[in-house]
Length: 353
Image (cartoon, rainbow, N blue to C red):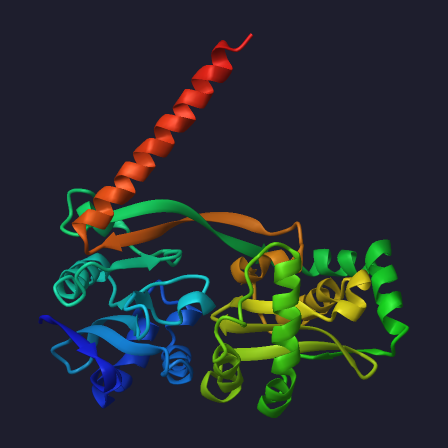
């Protein structure tokens, strides 16, 4: 069957909502960020900023063969993946063996509806098909790829015990205990999270700017509202907090998908940062996740916060699809100029005495 580009209220109609969960369960490269409850929560929280744009292919049995969840920025007219900057990966859903076939047709259907736009998947999901990006394929000629990485943290009972016993970690725990007994809250209630969010987002942005990174929440005032919705609309979500006495020392927000925990973002109390409360929280949480049967964590979006050396890099791709030939030509010209510049510098270095 053909693909349909649905915009506005039609994009999130009853048939789409009904077919999305089954397609999510059937898709081999599904992620936390394409779960219907998470994406629908994002559309709700950012309704003033983004208009839903969903491309679907219907199955003969009445379900869905494929689904590409996107949004149009009401202010800039940009076309972006659903969940946008809140997600570590951007993808689509399709039944097995139909991933590239569906996505190619979805992108071809979008091109006349959104002329001049550039759609960027910041990092493709692990296991997602990439043959659609080949220069011999219809949209591959309009797609440019760049390297990206997923960061994985494997869980190990032995390593967790060893890390907790390390002298440095023992000193951190002792320092935090000066404020009171340590208490891990694996799953904050919706009310507790909503009450804490203004403080958590303020800490996050202050730390980001101190580290030379852009703030995540100040430019997007509705972002905290999105996370406040998660405990009730997304069962796989949990906000975990570490308390030292009555003081909130650190928190991490994430999702469980299968046997993997996905870190969304985390933050620590500046008043306790000399004792690395985020690291202590993670060591305690890792033990809990192991007990729950999880095998590893995706820490891509929490990597700077965690400051842990045991993460393993997994190569993936960033893909930018150009619906505008002029923008594509300009991109290729810039890339060529940079390559020539790098080649010239290497040549100069090679002949320099």
